Image 1 (cartoon, rainbow, N blue to C red):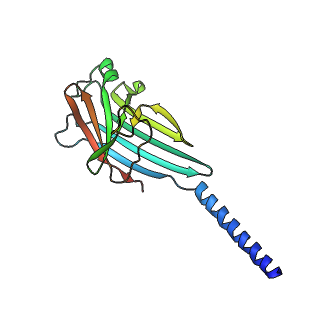
Image 2: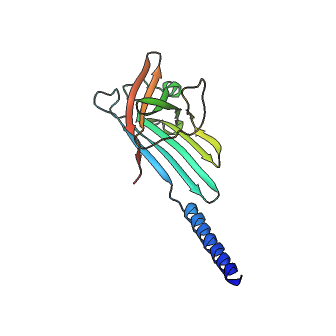
Image 3: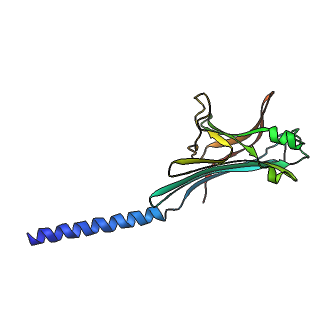
Length: 185
């Protein structure tokens, strides 16, 4: 009986130690991060346009942090997009469109960062979630294009997903730049 009790106590101690190691591993878990650099290609309407997008997820202790950020910037007012005044920049509809296997699955609505309007126009999206609560710092993201309206949230980005920036206007979508999500090394 004593030996069974001793084995049970040793088993409990090993399980408790393993559980503590797992909790420590989760609390110090490095964030998972995917990044995309957006660059203009040959023949694109604004060769100096550039941007980036990032999806980051981190599990820490008892909570989690998620974020998606995107940014597009180009010379202002001297650009070939017709966005040459502060009013034109404020009303420009610039979006990031995320795709996988040739199918668009999310659309990010970028907002003009008016603090950066001196020599360049910068448009941003910055969405964060902590413990399931969504915080739209700048812009918004429709995470399900198959449904009407905007399904606000964080996109489920994977390595290899595409991202392209477009300028929406009455004539349709003008493709600006594009990139590919890769794991941060």
